[in-house]
Each structure stands twice: as C-alpha cells, then as structure tokens.
Length: 280
Image (cartoon, rainbow, N blue to C red; front, top):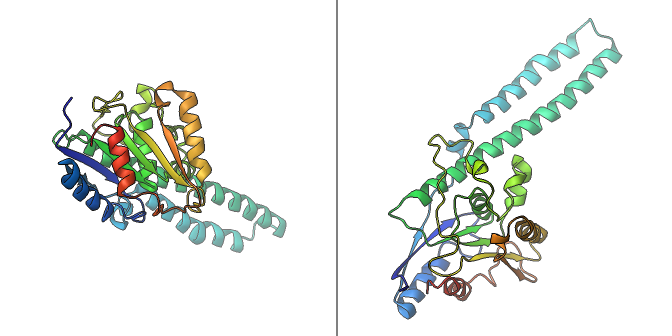
C-alpha cells in the first residue's frame, strides 16, 4: 500500500501545553515531514468543553448550589434555633447532617465530573466521525490522554494512538468511571455514551491497521508528580490481561522526567512513532 501524502493528527489537549504540544512541536514535525518525507501533516483540534461557559450548562452545578443553599439557609438555622431539641439532640442531628452533607457533596462532585467527561468524550467522538477528516493518529496528553483512553475503551477509536502521561485513572477516580481505565475495547453494549442523543456509537479506525500494525504507545515520566507513573503501568497491565488485542501496547518509561516530558517528547520521538505505523 502506497504511503499517504497527507497525515491527519487529532490532538486532544490537557490543561497545559505539556512538551510543546500542539505547537510548536507538531508544527516542527510538519516541517520535517514536508522536507524529508514529502508528506503534509495536518493537526486537528477541538475545543475541550470544560470552560466556565460549559459548566453553566452542567445541571449538577445547579444541584450542588441548591444543596449548599438549603444547607446553610434552611437546615443549619433550623437546628441552631429549634427549641424542640436538647443540646444532645442538636449535636446528634448536626453530626447526621454533616455526614449526609459529605456524602451528597461526594455524589454531586462525581456526577459533575462525569458529566464533563461525557461531554468531552462526545466532542471527540463526533470529530472522529467526520468522514472528511479521516484521522490517522490520535495523540492525547494528560487530561486528553484520559479522554483518548476512554475513547479506546468504549470502542469508539481503534486506530493509531499515542498517550502522553495519560490521566485516565485520576479522572475515573473523580467521576466513578473505573471501568473505562483500559486500552482493551469493552463490549458493544458498554460502547454507548450515556449522554449520546444520537445513539450511533460507531467504531472508527483500523484495529489491525491497514497502514501498518496499530500503534498503541504510552509514554510517562517516573518523576511525574501530577499523574503518578504507576497509573500508566497499571493501565498497560490491565489492558493486556483483559484483552489480547491490546497486547501490542507499549509503555515508554522516561526516567527522571516530570509531567511535561520535554526531554523525550520531541520531533524525533514523533517521527519514530509515525514510522512504526508506516505513515512516514
């Protein structure tokens, strides 16, 4: 099969640019590919829906505000001013209210984060379904690496993937979505987005890789203080044990590197990854 003259890379961002992604690193990659391989590289990006305007649309934000309002305006004043309760009774009721508040805050926080994650997943699912884009490689950094992990687990993407310090484990802890922390596609029933109003969970990408064997690379630094390195090791082990089709996943350990991986993730690294999938 002839190599493509144009490669489309979908970049899923994190909260920081990390190792110079997407610019200037991917721009430098494009210059290298044009000069040395006669290949054009197009970087596709989509805005991550976790800004202030997006939180306003999150119904769980209003539930949290309503709960806080009722706690401080209704329940606490009633307990402190009630003449029907003894001091011991008030102390007991305050303790129950405190425990209930902690539990409700935990549940609302979990649903708030999960709602945000579902919107992020749906944003990039829709991007992958745009036929005119024809994505060749998906790169996810930090939060974006977590989103890419979830896309793979849901069976929505089975093409070449590069996960840079993926934060899927941390995201799952806050959202109660631990079943998605795997690089092994789940069953078809699990591949339906809870917030998907179209109901079209379509698999995109080549599982075996018509452009070469599917690339599945995780790169992580051992001194990462944002996302623990052990999370990537656990991700790899879980994926390999749960599905043999993810056994081609590899973990590149960057000794002494932090969360930003500026020493290892450079143009030569990206070129090597694209060459592995026979794209360059």
